[in-house]
Length: 292
Image (cartoon, rainbow, N blue to C red; front, side, top):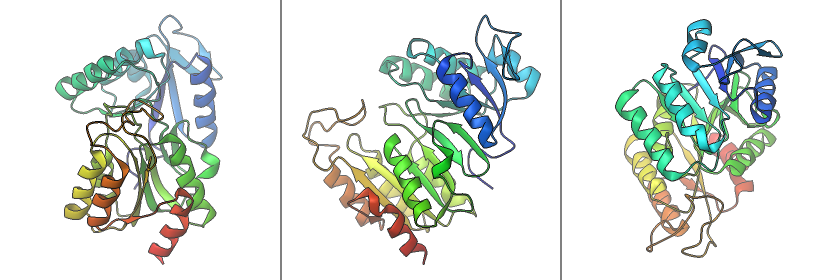
């Protein structure tokens, strides 16, 4: 089994007729992802290279049985798109869109929690999720992933998500599922959500976790690793040299009030039993050593 997605996942793409939505939807379909529909208001009845387009998510779900959504909607309308997907009964909403106002992010997430308990939000501002050889929902290059397990990957950083996959593959270590949770201040799915899924997944024998400065999610994840996990975790925390008070990369990566620094996160993870590397190029080789 794979967490979140597999070959049976039926995917609709919100914003399919836009350039980004079209490019990545077709790329994901070529990878083997079961892309069954697109949604663009006013374009219902058309298609994109054989993928039917509907005016609403509700119509697309009724016609195709889609159970996952990939959101490539512009930032000004992305929160409404996420809410629409949740209200249509979509089980997994993967929001790639970046630059969504923080208030909109909070409003959409709170709406899902209150009104759509069966919907999981991944993102926003994330690369998505890939189960190598099975399905790819997002913008992760499938060519750098390797099927066959046994490592799960969860990362706040999009770029380092790709590097982790590359380093594992280069060292001959396959992956079960790789989840980019995004680095915005209001992520729909966090480290602990993914760690819990990896812990329960019989195909996942070990986990790579990539954190970065800002917030306290890594410290909370460290507590979960210490108390709830018996699978080895190799971790990396980006931003060791980041100056306090300055945003690094995106909205969530900021050290303020003496909290959110890399050193404290590294210490918490090490105390929890995680194997922390100080260079992301060591992720693959260290994981190979751990598995051996």
